[in-house]
Each structure stands twice: as structure tokens, then as C-alpha cells.
Amino acid sequence: MDLGRVVGTVVATRKVEGLKGIKLLVVEPLNHKREVVGPRFVAVDTVRAGPGDIVNWVASREAALALEETFVPVDAAIVGLVDSVDVETRQ
Amino acid sequence: MRFCEVLGSVTQTIRHPTYDGHKLMVVQPLDEQQKATGNSFLAVDVVQAGPGDKVLVLMEGNGIRQILGIKQLPIQSLIVGIVDAAELG
Image (cartoon, rainbow over all chains, first blue to last red; front, side):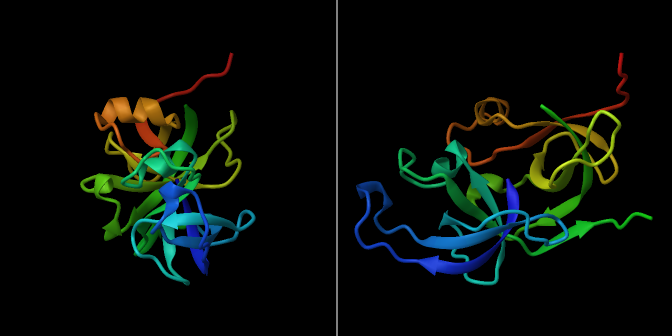
């Protein structure tokens, strides 16, 4: 599980049966300082996130388990809208 | 399992229902010298760890599903132990 920021949406009309009705978003991965730590990717949305939101996302097999139909070709899913990240600053 | 330090916590009001009642923490992987290495990530906590604690993080989905007893669980990393001491031979 990692932090990420939603930066856009993706529309795909023709897709695999199991992906029908599922929202796709473009996410950039962040660390706790909200610095970008990797390339952007496409994730399915389970919490009605939108561009600009900081989110909690999961990858690999667990991503498909976030959906109602769990045997689907999905490798990244947004599972939470982050309200705040509380990290103590150290000297 | 990975050796990490807890940096802090994350609050998420709107979340996947399986996250209800679980504490979500930010953890930083450490190397054998207990120095930060790699990027921080998020982990669910079941051992009441707090900021500054050195912890063991399980990163195997099937093991996590067995511990929490839920078959369809989109949780990838779980804090399973607080490290008291680590020694290198």
C-alpha cells in the first residue's frame, strides 16, 4: 500500500467483460513527504476519488480483491481517500 | 517480512469497507544499520505500534488474509511485530 495523487482519468469503451462499469484513474505514487517517487500508472477506483485527491492504493493481487468481482485483470486499485498524513518531524 | 520504522499515521474517512476499524501507519524501510532505505509506504497495524517504533511488516497478501481472517482483503502490508532488539552476527 502506498500514497498517491490522482492526476487524471482514463476512458476505455472496449474492454474485458470484468472491467465494465469500473472507473479508471491516473495516479502518481508519492512518499509521506508527498514527493513523486515513480512513474504514473492507471488504477481502478473504489472510493469515488477525483483529480487532486491524495489516496491510498494497493497493487498486485490485492488490487483485484478490492472489487466486487475479484477475478478481474486489475493490478492497481485505489482503496482510500487520505484526509491527513501525520508524521513527526525529527531533528 | 521487512524491518521498518513507524513514521506516523494516516487518516482516511472514505475507504474500502475492509479497512474499517484498522489503524493505517506510514512506515519507512530500514537497512541492517537501521538507516532509512527506499521509499516509505503504508501498512495496517494490529500490534498498536506508534511513531518511532521499529516493526516487522508482513508483505504477503495471503498471510495477511489468514491473520485477519477475511478472504477478500485488499491489504498488502501489515505490521505484525514490534522489534525490541536486532543483532547482527
